[in-house]
Length: 104
Image (cartoon, rainbow, N blue to C red):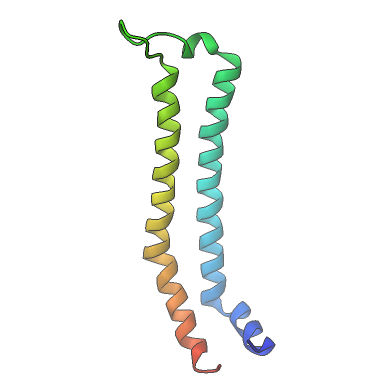
């Protein structure tokens, strides 16, 4: 790809909007994931007694559903990113591609 076209794309307001939106979504979802994950790890490190409490008469403790919840929330956050990417990012990407495919 020609450097002049690359510079045009970099300076395009739609491209800058795409990068800005993608970065804000990515940073937000990453922060949520890190808070959830490290919150669980800190709970394991500093409050083992809470996680070791049994649920009912069986052998399942509170830590098991919380750990499963961390995993499920990770998948859900991935799904949120895919939904946002398909809804917003793909539309902007296509718009940018349409502008600059003619010039190549």
